[in-house]
Length: 311
Ligand code: SF4
Image 1 (tube, protein in one colour):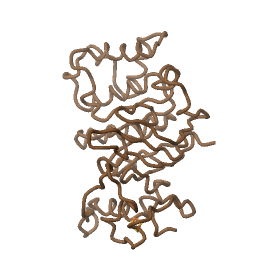
Image 2 (cartoon, rainbow, N blue to C red; image 1 turned 120 degrees about the vertical axis):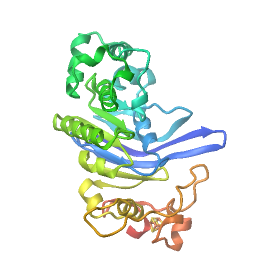
Image 3 (cartoon, protein in one colour; image 1 turned 30 degrees about the vertical axis):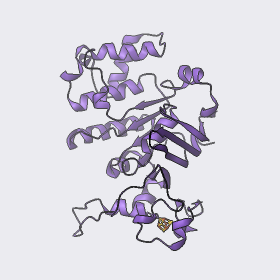
């Protein structure tokens, strides 16, 4: 049985403008010890996927689907049990904008203690905080400091340490390198690689495919609330199938080649009134007549790809 298996996961938000079809029929599975990278443009459903797995959807709800995690059916667990036994203890999250998620008026130590109190930790606080900081290559000197006294990279390490503190089996990291300069990004990527070597499984959500190629064995590409391609990292990067995945990869500059990066014309689809057919129809260079009306079905025979070209 897969370590995590997501089947037909569908989450929608209620807004004053209507229902937002943020996540539609998403499927993937990874084995124990594997990590998955989730890529795609802004508002394609990447963060909603992470928030749905950890059951922190606000202004909306999970409409249907199934999430199997380490033998448990996550969506069937009552709220109180999920709060007490799953969230942070088994699955935790490094939230998007983590650089701003530390409270400026409390010391780092107070913020670690708050996390532990909220999760009814009864062991040796000092030791577990120290161990957690060590795992992200920080020492206990940061504990007396306030967030403004730390560099961007140190703040990001602190929030990763907070996500790791109860030794969850799976950590969802939403844009962990966004807003960091390239040198600090490299430090954070190396940190993920080191944690992976120590056996930690992740879902890393990022628009930066280069980051994902470094830390994940499996890659899921999202577009318009759907996972349009999923597979081994090497297959996705070397033999992409879906026209959107190809477009994403062609938009990355390659210094060693004399070719200019291409861009994908058009804008992301409206998720309030989604089209009947393929969500990528308006922007797809290979679109066919049938793509306009009929939504493509997942083809799992030649990998996992949601496109009529692979019927
Ligand atoms: Fe393009 Fe059609 Fe495939 Fe959609 S289903 S990605 S429009 S070829």
